[in-house]
Length: 336
Image 1: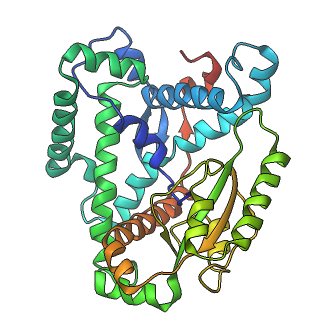
Image 2: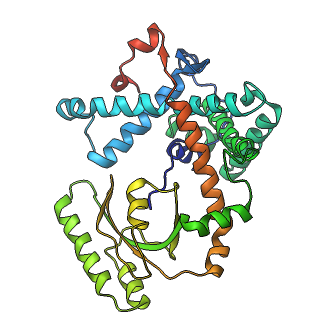
Image 3: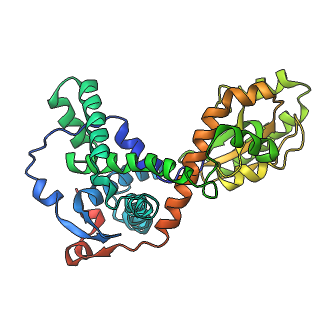
C-alpha cells in the first residue's frame, strides 16, 4: 500500500546492506569533488553518482533491461532520469534545512550524539557482514562511499530528532498517544483491505484495469467477511496484506485516502483507484476498539514520520541547488 514516504527510497537502499569501512579507492579524490552547494552545504560528486547509478538501474527494472545501451531509448528516458536525480539530490539538504529551522543547534549533523549514533549503525553493519572485504564489496556494488554513507545515516538520525522537536509544540504535531487516539476517533482513520493489480513492465494497462474492475465486482458480491478475505487473499492480489489496516488521514497518498474516506460502512467497496504503479480496490472492514488499540503505537509512529516529512517537504520547496562549473559540465549518462 502506498504511504506518503518522501525520502524512504534513498535510505532503504542504503540500509539494506551497506557498511562504511575505510575505503582507499583511487576514486576517492573524484568522489569528494564539490559539484555545488545547497542550503549552505557542499554537495559532492559521490552523492550525484550514487543517485544516478541507482536510478539508472531502477529505470531498467521499470522500462526494460538495456535501455541505456540503445541510443534511442537512452534519449527517450534521459530527461526523466535527469529530473528524478536532480530532484532527489535535494532530499538530504531539505532535512538539514528543516533541522536548521526546528532544532536548536545549527549544523546538527556534526553533533556528538548524532555521530555516535552513526558509529553504532556502522558497527552493526560490520557485524552483519563478517569481513571488511565483504563490506567493501557492498559499498562498491551499491555505488557508494564511506563518506556518503555516514552523511546519509546522519541525516536519517536527524529526521528522528525532528520528531521530538516538532512534538514539543502541539500546533506542529500531536505529541501523545491519548490525544492521537482521540484524533483518530474523530473520523481520521478507516479500517480497510484491498486488492492490488500492479502494472509491470510490458503489461497491458487496460487489461489490468479490467482485472481490477472484476475484483471490485467480486468484492461487491461477497456476502460476508470470510468471502471478502478469500477474494483479497487470492493470487491476483499483488500486494497481499497479512491483515486489514488503518488508512490514517495524511499518511497515505491522496488517491488511497480519498477512496478510503468514501467508504461508509463495513463491506462497502471503492471504485477502482488508479495510482502510479497500478490499480487498487478498497473494501472497508469491521473494526473495534481492541483492534485500534493493538495498532495504535505503530499508527502513531507512521503519523509522526509523515508529519516530519511534510515539514521537510516544505523546506525542500525553498531549496535551490547551485551548481559550480564542474557540476554544470557533468552528463549524468556518462557517470560510471
